[in-house]
Length: 109
Image (cartoon, rainbow, N blue to C red; front, top):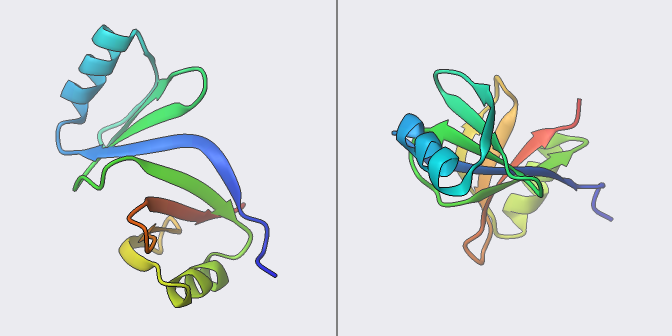
């Protein structure tokens, strides 16, 4: 039986031009910035939080919190997922499922 995986309200978009993307979503959608750093900008939409993350584009990335990152990652790889990007220092791991969806798993604090 798989451990409890919980979704967050976070959707991530990666782009090298996070400032331009933030300006677009602020101006065209009226979204408010609630977090800003050199590498990530967070915008509140109401239903979800949109994070603009500086980096290679994967398309929209959903986020899931898991109780044990390593065991969940191993189980998902065995089930056909592949690692797209990994940052053990965070810890987090971007995976692509067999159907093309990219999602991030991070360990529940």
